[in-house]
Image 1 (cartoon, rainbow, N blue to C red):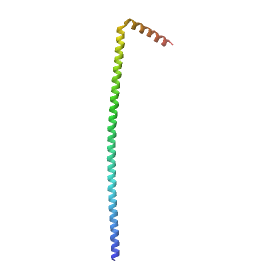
Image 2 (image 1 turned 90 degrees about the horizontal axis):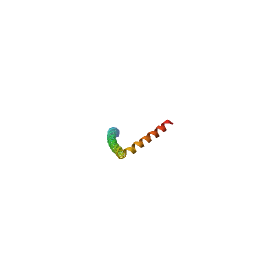
Image 3 (image 1 turned 30 degrees about the vertical axis):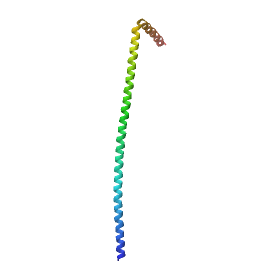
Image 4 (image 1 turned 60 degrees about the vertical axis):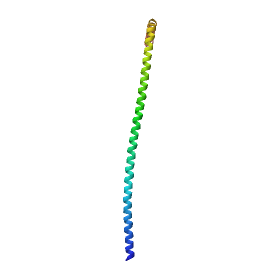
Length: 108
């Protein structure tokens, strides 16, 4: 009878160990799942932050390029204005000839 009791105790111990193993595996699975969710959340936040930084850099470079183009346009306009003021008669003749040329090109 003692052998049967020992076997029964061993069987119960194995069942208890298996139950504890299942519970530990469930806890481990939950822990890994939560860790992955946290990692994904952190990665998403990092991607958003880097995207904003990249967008800010592009916007800043675009603004700088726009200011440079505006400054160059203003300078060119002032240069043309200055040249017209220096030689008004020559400017009138050049504009007249340019008008004739454009007119001939549009007649075709």
